[in-house]
Length: 149
Image (tube, helix red, strand yellow):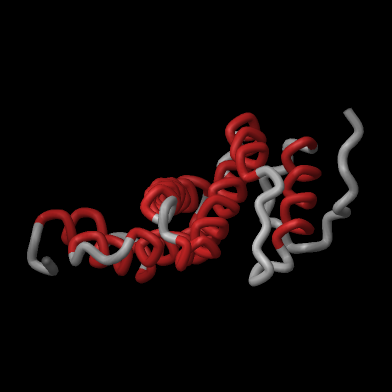
């Protein structure tokens, strides 16, 4: 894998977290693990500019979508499915795809899990950020009131 063309062209010039994501893809790791790795890569890439961030965020989004689909009928992974779906909202918004983020948030709806007590508040904050067309990272300081229609 390390000597292969893909690793040499995609992973080596990229950040360490992005390279790990490529490696985990090649090793056929679980989609949620790959997605989480690319999410870490997106955080790492924020300092490298919009293009580097978007590259990692796109991969994370794609793998979180796949993980959510894989967990659809797996009750033991319902929490991970909700997290994957929520992070799809966040990543879509961060990529400036506000319509897509709004649709994802609506699809997530009133989904709840006692193991995720933060989820309703985070959903409300996302709603405010989406309506404000704010693609900045959610640092938890935005007001969580519902936007006026």
